[in-house]
Length: 228
Image (cartoon, rainbow, N blue to C red; front, side, top):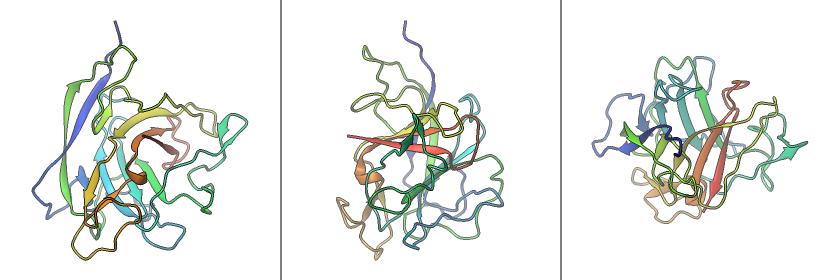
């Protein structure tokens, strides 16, 4: 029998948020007190695409808060930089050729108690609802191809795993399905390579699998794998 791991669907609500919520698309980011709102190398503040509390039964990050930021002006795929079989030191800040640094920031925060004073200005703030479900892998060990946290990745191509520069093997946390778009407020600048003027994409709309360092060597010690 194949192992069925704890999993939760992440469902996007339709009623716009008017106050902070810990589980949201856009909205008010819940960041650790010492954590600033991330900025891209281009100087533009990154957009908060989504955030949620990781359910307690999803080890090793249960109870932590996940936030996914991405630059509106740069829309591309991630490219892992390796050295001696590991991701390079401080890979969350390492160059992403042809760019001098990543255009995204994925954070796992352990002390994110209070919301920021202002909401994400570009994306429409919507609630997220996490619901437990049975993510039974198929004959090729592929899980459900949905927006989810936990469970088994639904690799679109082949499994990818990486070792952190600290030596720990990164652990799968969540995934975003291919082609998922995020609504933006009217009048916002259009995102390059997006499918519509009124939505933004993560990593060109690729299927995204978020891995993170279980040793927690840095809140940004995460890696977003892109496949299509």
